[in-house]
Amino acid sequence: MSSQLFDAIENLGKEKGIDKEILIEALEAALISAYKKNFKSATNVRVELDESAGSMRVFSRKTVVDEVEDHQQEISHEQAKKIDPNYDIEDIIEVEVTPKDFGRIAAQAAKQVVTQRVREAERGVIFSEYADREEDVMTGIIQRIDPRFVYVNLGKIEAKLPEAEQMPTENYLVHDRIKVFVTKVENTSKGPQIYISRSHPGLLKRLFEMEVPEIYDGIVEIKSVAREAGDRSKIAVYADNPEIDPVGSCVGQKGQRVQAIVNELKGEKIDIVEWSEDPVVYVSNALSPSKVVDVLVNEEEKSTTVIVPDYQLSLAIGKRGQNARLAAKLTGWKIDIKSETEARTEGLLTEQEDTDYADVEEDLFE
Image (cartoon, rainbow, N blue to C red; front, side):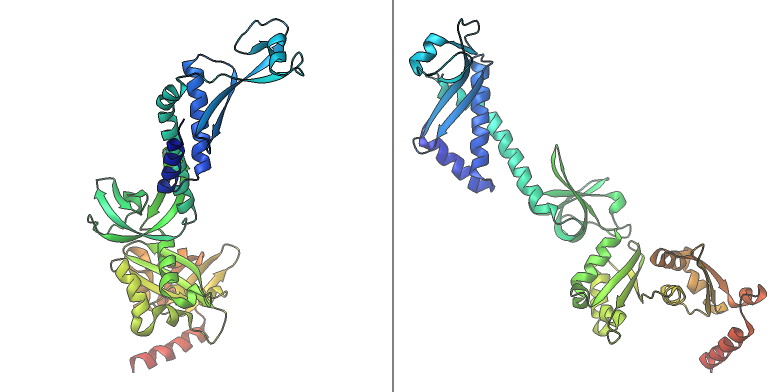
């Protein structure tokens, strides 16, 4: 075996980004397989590759016995002593069995095995590169589209965006550049598989982290996200420092920060609300942009009854119940919305609350 083979292995390793030792091990395994196949050997054999000399030798492990019954696995005591006088019965001896034309035969047989190992090693390199991108946002280019999937090129790998993870209001075009959320990375028998989404709430969260420095630096924290992709979302934020306005930080000057995210999500409406450990305050904020008169809390059932002005009832509930539904997802509380008139009829609104709200309503319409 010439040194050219080792040079070729080294170049292949550099080209594919694979450790040369992995390829050497693959070559050794291929040569052992070739020897057993072509010379019908059932013995344990070892291949010795000498990179500096550019040589290849095959050794067969045989047991020293008095009478040889299996020439492939045994060697006589007399023959063993010719190799080394110290060998005794039942010792294991390595005998060189390198055939004269083994280089040609091995090269033919090794090609497929080495190719497979190279493919496996390449898959391992790709998986290692993408494994830490799980729950992260990546930018890709749409390669092709069929009725079930949008195929997105993410560099060294192509990911499939299934219909269930697409935004229903979004049109996908070949060669478009889009941001996707990586939900999972798996190393399967078919190679690394990356699962991506455009509708996952995690996409919205990561986009805010990328766009708002205060979130990236940990000054402002995203507490919860509720999303109906392509239509409307709510995000609850919190700042431990009372001098920091978490909502204002996310909106940005003249709304530039949130508008950049809205543009990326093709016009999806985003409500940014302030998180609070007080469910009364939190639920009231979550029902934004509607006004709330009172929130009645049932801790045991983790449910709330929210009373809103009559003229705000439809706004609080939202189109097809969307605002209330998103608020419930965001807060984790069940929300039952009642108008002020309905609440007064059921005795849920006290006279004091009724009077206080009447004063506020009067001020609003003056």
